Image (cartoon, rainbow, N blue to C red; front, side, top):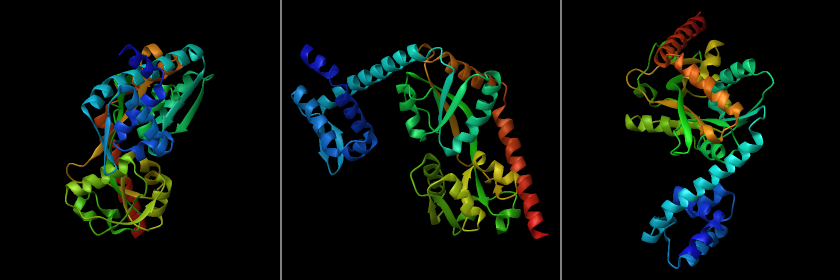
Length: 330
C-alpha cells in the first residue's frame, strides 16, 4: 500500500488526467481540455489501473463511470491534485510576493466589469502594471489555482474550498433590438414576445448562451436562431445591422444603449440573471498586489447597493430606449 501511495505521488500528471476525466465524464472531452490525444489519456488511466491492480473506470458508449475502487481513489486524487496546485501557487507566491504586477482574467462580457476596478486600482497604485487576459469563465478557477492568474472574474461560483469566491455584482438579461425594431418603443417585454422573432446567439458554448436558452425553454418559448456568431462584439453588430434580435446581460450592452445604437428592453416578471464572481487564492498564497486588489473589490461591494444600482441601470436603459425610439419615429 505504501508503495502504491508513493507511486501516485510520482505520477501527478496521471492523477490530474484521472480527475479531468471524472469532471468531463468523457475521455474525449478530457483529452480536449488537457490538450492531449485520447490515446494518451487512455494510457494514463491504464497506468493508474495497473498500479491499483483493479479497474477504476467503466467505459460505456463514450461516457465513463467509476467502479467502487475508482470512487475511493477519486476523493484522494482530488485532494492530491488540489494540494499540488496549492503548493505550486505558494512557491510562485514566494517569487512574486513583492512584484508590482497584477494578472486579471475575464471573458469578453466581464471585461467591462473588471475595467472600472482596474482603473481605480491603477490610480491608487500607479507603479503597478495590470494585464487583463481574455479567459473563458470556466477556466478561471484552474488558472487562479495554478498561479497563472492573480484574480479572475467568472459567471459561476467555483466549487473549490481553496479559493476565495466573492459576488462582485449581479446582472440581468434584457431583450436587445435595433432602434428601428417594432419593440424599440416598448417599456417592457414578455418572453413569449420573443417567440418567432429571428434570434441571434453565440455559436460556441458559453454560460450566457446556456442561461438564455434555458430561460426560454423553461417558459415554453419556442425560439428561432437564425444566426450564430463567435464573439460578443459580432453579436451586437449583427443586431445593430437589423439581422435579428438577441437577449444579453445589461452590462454587455450599456455602451451601445448610451450611444443610441441599440435599444435594451427589460423583461416583465421574474427573469434569469447572473452573478459575477471574483475568484482569488487564499490570503496565505496570494501576492501583496493581489491582496490589495481583492481589498479594493471588497470595499467597492461594501459601499455599493447592488439592488439599487441594478434598478437605476434598468431605468436608464428603458429611458434611453424610449428616446431612441422617439428619435427613430421622428
